Length: 260
Image 1 (tube, rainbow, N blue to C red):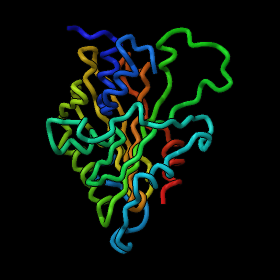
Image 2: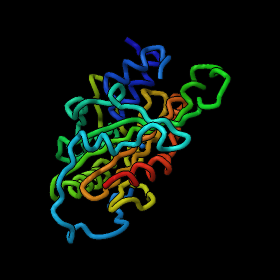
Image 3: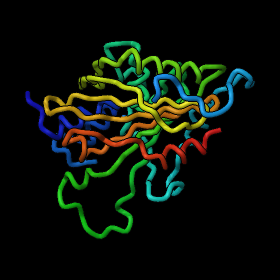
């Protein structure tokens, strides 16, 4: 059965493995609402630091950006829009799993300590007019933010897994999220601003189900034993293909500043 444009749009969002909940939220009529492959160290050396102790998921939840903490943006729970576990995200190349997990706001490394939310432009504040059409309503940058924490050198290993994945998956990979399959045709390292202790930034080109390709950007940052991932989607832009735009620096700066 041929999928409707709305369903196809939502299935493509599975690049970030936004899971069945996001696919359901989008629905068939579409009516609801992306480094250096070498990790770029910004400061300090982890080798001289004491052994890291992982934060709990509950502690990570408290470190996520909360509503009102970033002017011009609204923060909401990711419970309804993000996958609950890595088992819902599959790739056809194991080396690419950390990339898929990072874009799904899941821990790119080996840990169960994970928390996530969404941070989006707050265009509604002060606005009096209703969107003229569905495309207009979708024209908002939404960033999926994931925090994960690790024991010992686990955070460094997670960053290396992402960095290695950018190289290993340059030719693309297949991604399945809750039965919906998406084809990533190319992955390329990007030069991102130095953040935290390490940062990896990459872009992925995605097959839009026969309607061209779209480029998504992802940024992964380590601060101490905590890793933060950022993946931005603009559904209006995605429906037309092309570049989704980089992750908003304001979101990255504000979130990294909250990390311990």
